[in-house]
Length: 158
Image (cartoon, rainbow, N blue to C red; front, side, top):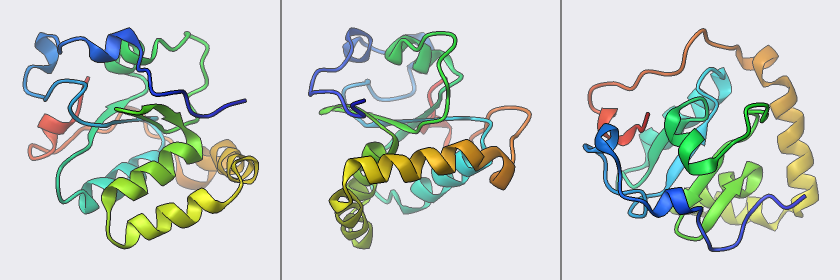
């Protein structure tokens, strides 16, 4: 199974933002990180990225939200056990999304991303899937999706 798609984004990604997204930049202008909004680990990951994203380049959307449904066209029975990065080069899942996010953060995180990328994809995928299977037990599950702070609100899509 391939975890990244080629440099073509789904038709919904190139569309202009609707009224619900009017305060955010257009979809083609900033990478979007989709995450499981009720997963404790996923929420910690988003907090980690926000704290280190000095250029405020990323936007965020829960996999349970309308943006994920519209852009990613996820089937109703799709497992929400993967972080997904949607950027100008395509849609990247699991560890491919993680190393690309690290690279975009720059600095020492760029090095971490490069090191992660050097691990063969099957091994990275196995490790990612192992953690994903146990994430609720290890990090908890929330009742509802993460609510952004007032400062973060413009970076979050519905």
